Image 1 (spheres, rainbow, N blue to C red):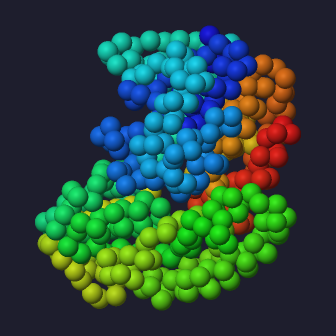
Image 2 (cartoon, rainbow, N blue to C red):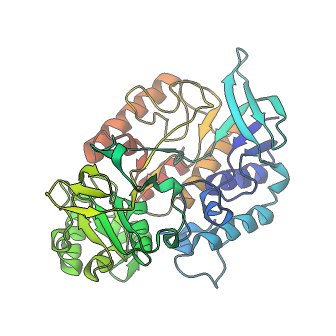
Length: 428
């Protein structure tokens, strides 16, 4: 068979559709019992980076697949169950379900001396199989391995429950409790807002300030702003100045809410999108706190000298990118950065590609569709890759440029700007 596709979430289904349209023989391996990735897991009760209050932060118009929009009855920002239903319906519409082996986990992917790839997998019945392919496309996502900070002093004495966001399901599970949520990223603010509707008290422990943006600015959803011609024609400095001034007018300074001010300019790190967290703080539902200093039995103490009773600590501290079935050092290099030519191709592993391993300010759907179309052109021979040395130089140049804007963090290496990246892929 020509292609093995790993993963049947949003990125995997976009890729399956592109392969099917091009008439390429492929099989898609998905370890879950159904398609949909993280969007179906909260309702299905499976462990994963989703929770019952999960909604899209991007609009249905830009998150839906090209040629197959989400239903008109959906709200602008659909909830996880609607997104899961849409992805399932898209798979049926695209005619790719017959290519997908559900309940099949990939154990290993290795390149053979003749240049082919051997994929070892285990199906739902425990049967192991080894199959050869000319190409392997990884679309399995990257929010897989929970990242936990070093436990604060006294953690072993904690009389409550400590968990990572991957194990958080619903605020009602914490009704009447005192809950400390750690972090200020997307999952942290979502979970703090959700749990605050049930908990006795909710505290948001923030070590480092991040820019908090509403879902809409200037009367437009943020992802529509990101692609508007008047926005893309501006320089980065002009964009920053406009957003920073607009936020100051619209909501004031974050320190007015008891949150730390960011130590960086907007678009120098990931931003947090939330319409609710600042409102919940103003309404007393969520109380901001600095970093945790130590834990003492049933109390959590913070670096400002205050302490609170706590029954639950929820660490919303992100995820490590992990691909244990792939060759060592791919796609994550020795310095922790994702090293891929045009964020897709493994330069030193011919025939290995990645879809969805990017983080835009806006919807990812059109990016993964463009990645899938480019990979399809490579597989069919209508697009030709440069020599590995040329690809390695492009990777180094990209990482150098993105580090200049976002720093050296692991997650910075997958950051992309939507409009320029789409143009780059369409021209490839």
